[in-house]
Image 1 (cartoon, rainbow, N blue to C red):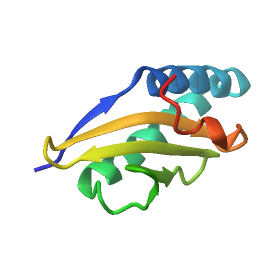
Image 2: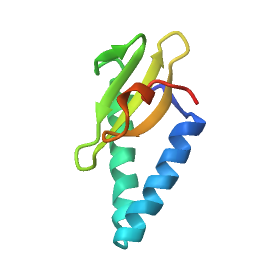
Image 3: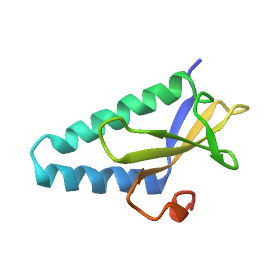
Image 4: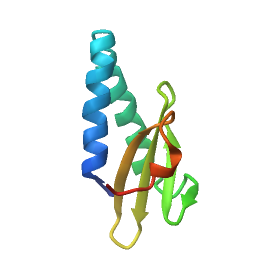
Length: 100
């Protein structure tokens, strides 16, 4: 059974903001970004414990074509993946695990 995926507010904002940024650069590029996020989320849902823990219970997986990492937490007892951030790799890594 695949886990439920829950996007936090930060992750939703980051997806929207990045979509608009890419779409303003080139028509269709924002949609390609969203497609890669969706594909990566699918990989997480297939094997949520298959990616390394980086800090406390947070795990990370990088998007293959965009400079982003998805930071998430898997709660096995609840069968839920909480997506904390869709984090641009050029940002300050200290803010990667903040919930705000």
